[in-house]
Image (cartoon, rainbow, N blue to C red; front, top):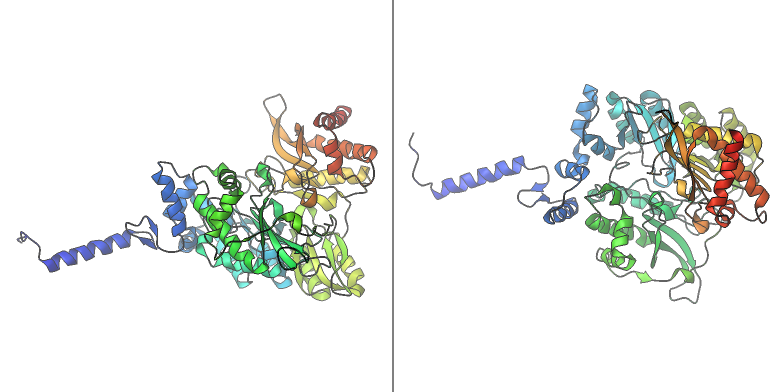
Length: 588
């Protein structure tokens, strides 16, 4: 067959079209050939990555993984692996987290599934559905997290589809619950029922939740991102430990803006990196919260570090830019400049109740009460979940409210039903009242379920509470936070007493579980970062060390009004260290 010396114009057009079609077929879905990224909402991420590459820098492995494969488009791959009983490998372990699925080996050769529960509030029907999924596909229990969320653990690879579809059928989702995404949107556990709150933030939390779910550019950030709302209620939401915290404030008449309730915006909180969120200097209306959140996130997308995971948080962009430049960049994504307004011109926030998440409390609705249920280090058995769902339906409105303190509230209970509710909670092996130690006890998953943890935090938390309750009648609230690694999921820096897990050498080429001890943290109006007092305390010695410190506080405080945080701040680190070491020496 002879080949013509020159192609006709029609042949040239045909070949050009064929080549273009082949290039399009080879390109990842949504990618415009030659454009260096997708044409859709994810384009903002590719532009940021391309800028890094243009500067001659190297993207971290997670950025390369997101660049090659959109994790939200992995359903066929995920279902095929489930059918074959396969766990993900390599960077796919990271990408699975976009679906809330964490392969937690070697701690457990299984998946953990983390949900998204906006405001931490779900119905009794949904709560019962999670219990059924945990019973059918998990280990028969769930964990309540420090973001007022739920985790199902011990899921086999063959069961992940059953879990995900079961959640969807219950009106729940795990989409974006892990990896480089905006985590569960939190708020005050008592939102809408709190007698002192300034604003019911539940609609704002829901609005932002659905905004995230329906805007694909809100996924695949430089790293994880936390957002919380505080409406001025008695139970803290810890909004100032988040990347973005919205706080309701009241402005009285005679100021530069009309009187009413507004929100202040704080940014860059990450206590694991020793920083609370900083006030952005603006005052916004409630309806501006979601657009402002989206604008602030977009600046992080554009300028967050994609070359170093340790620096890939909002705090470090703020450190580079400063607050004013970050705000200027955010306002490019908003229709108008935000109102600058000093915090001092706002009325003080209503006081927090450190025990407001435990026991019986009146609601804003006459004759109605909520009951805070104590959970052992945030763990709930499935049968207990079914029982709590029944209590909520029988005696309340059917709402279950999770808290950032790893417990839950049952709300809208009539006064005449309170005694029955108390009895039924106790019959489940749970409690509606707690000592001042147990009420403020927070522990991360620990090394029984997390590969990063250096110790069994939940077991040690129980050991500490049992030891202290048997020896001290402590008359004020105290928060003890145990975290298994520097990621600080349990926020050890803001506890009155913070414990960071470590391995302690025995001097015989072996190691045991232990902790570094921190004292004097706080949150809200008492916010402070705890100071490191002692390193490498064996786990078995920790309860005695804490007992000595708390006993010294009771004896040496200036008055009953002096909090433990104030006491710890007043003493030098050397003095605090001497208290701990004295007890350890006596124990030896």
